[in-house]
Length: 278
Image (cartoon, rainbow, N blue to C red):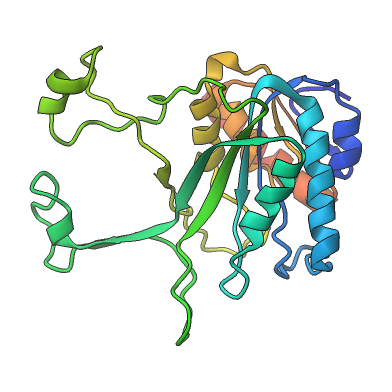
């Protein structure tokens, strides 16, 4: 069952139960949020208690297959009417023995007023500032547009080293390179706010809730590529985590109950591998 580079057609708990304990170094995944997304196979409207019980079972299976110094990056969002979903899901992973080592905020859209951008970046910016990224606009008297989701970084011990500069950014004030940085590198930790916009898709979306490939790329780099033998996604969908692994040259394994999603994922993986060869 442990064939890197394979997406298995089965439910994730069945699949994980057939993997060797401690055989996975990085898990990057986004389970269904139970908010009524129109999946073609899975029912995204199960009763809340049953959904959370299932998440607890997924967490237990994931903990068994994760190596002792491995990382699990769990992307979960909610709905405007039910913003507790991410926290409730995270609590099920806590109950299973995971420790929340980092809470990362995936920023999908952000507005930056010119006066807040600082003298280094606001040259040429219009008086209205900039607004970048994609979000689903709503017409509501109660809620703001939802422009962010959580990425919970779980580990078994809470003290797993990460590669803090793998997704680093240059210093805005270059004097800080001389003042604070021991290695005198013009790069600093990005922090726990990651701006990752959705890729623009003009045709019909083949999957109702997929994250951009850049998200798992950043998660894998954050853990440390040199400490990764195998990447797993229990909810592979159309293969974003697999594509990230291919780009980074790391074996992957995943599980998916929808054969059509697997077909799309394999087509995307083949196209990615062809691009890499060229």
